[in-house]
Image (cartoon, rainbow, N blue to C red):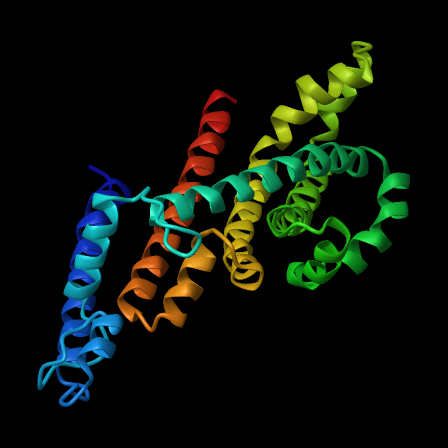
Length: 281
């Protein structure tokens, strides 16, 4: 067995060990921190901890675990505008991210092909890209709210904006980097521009395009949380902000954990799709 294979087999075990050590350190640090002696019982309940002497107001891993188990047991309940299950909140956020991301892909990938295949188009559009790309996606939110006049659709627009640039730039880079020999062979065989783009350029540029998509989905998932904190209503970002208003630190930490897990899952799905494309090639 090669050293690379041994490393891949050992990595999950080491990850579990590291996670265990971090949880133990968290538990010990919280246990030894400032106690909640005299803490009002109702306030302590909101914080997700017991109002007993010697226990910190900061939730322990066990407190967060209990919150997570309770949330998983009934993730889709709906008791009103400000009281929905985390499954419902995640579903709203995922729907916005996937819709904005999908619209961005429809725009960015063809435009990236155009820029990568045409130096004139690249030189023409590059100033606009360089000006708009550094703008924070959240800077568009006031304009979106004013023009669209719907918080959910405004959040989708912000996701669209932040998802466009990584896909556009990576697609253009991948298309421009296709080996000249392959393109020359296609021209020699009198392959049309459309067939050349689909059968020669797209397969060669696919790994780079998927890299841009992975970057975009990560940024989109990050931005939706901030956008939902601003506009409120529904979504995992609003859930975290609402729990802050309720002073429930255990729920906040649970929400942060779920945000991270869903973000990792989205990245892994695109990574698997990219590896499938590479394997077929």
